[in-house]
Length: 157
Length: 208
Image 1 (cartoon, rainbow over the protein chains, first blue to last red):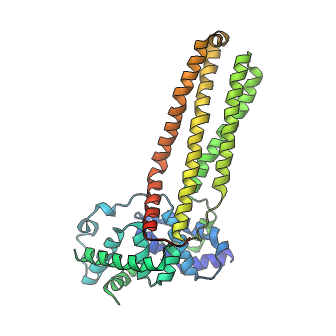
Image 2: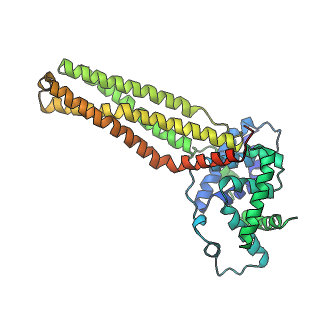
Image 3: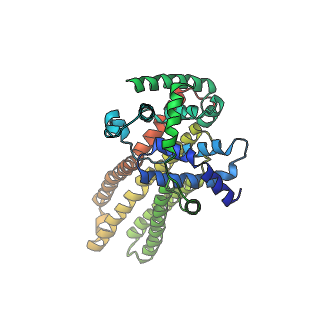
């Protein structure tokens, strides 16, 4: 794959990178650095991309692996409550309130649970999730069930 | 569609407002140096390699100007320690140059990083045990050579006892310091990797 083709493909799928940054990195400056690191690592790994999976799935895998093996600064969110994490002055509709609660609940999960549930919510099959994460398909199903219950409880609580 | 998926789809709009780099910036990114943990370790390793090579050159030079046989023997011991240190560093360099395949699944990737970083830090601690105490003892001897009569000092058993005592104190101290510095720099990182590996193992992995 040429440099131009690779870059245009990354650009077309940058939503995947942003999604992972959104979940694992807090400050905008860190997000920018991590974004560049992901692109660099993807470029270094492109020779091993065999094309037997979609480019988007492959990019998701590289992005997740890069973020999870990078020295990340500690997040602030775990120490905060939902009230302090969300701006009090924000006039939120019922819908955005629900999505913000979901975001907050997901950010409180551990790294692995976060990866599994977001892949599931993005409609990846259990087979694909098992392949990306490295656990069995049956255990993916069990984990998803448990995490969903936990998220629902957190969103109601 | 379930409640969580609906809420997630609402979030997608928010997520898309992330970092948006132009093609030229992406091009620059793929030609820049990595800021990852391996690159950080590699930079430290390069600095140590220069230090060791500089030490070897300096002690070879000093060997020619040594005023007596005792100094010559001591400098040879230090030189041997530097050469051993250089060989350990060379092993570290080999290890760090082996690229980790990010095409693997998350579990295999985290395990590979954990193995590689831990091994490199172990080599560093080994250097802390051999190279640094010997260097410090060399400083002690060279200082003695300048200030006093080295032949007289090492002509008595007490002289050798003092040198041995210095080494006995310095070796564990340097090893402990190397361990402490590694713990400060990479402790949290390794803990996080271990936590994630544990979580993946508890999730019943059967893939690699």
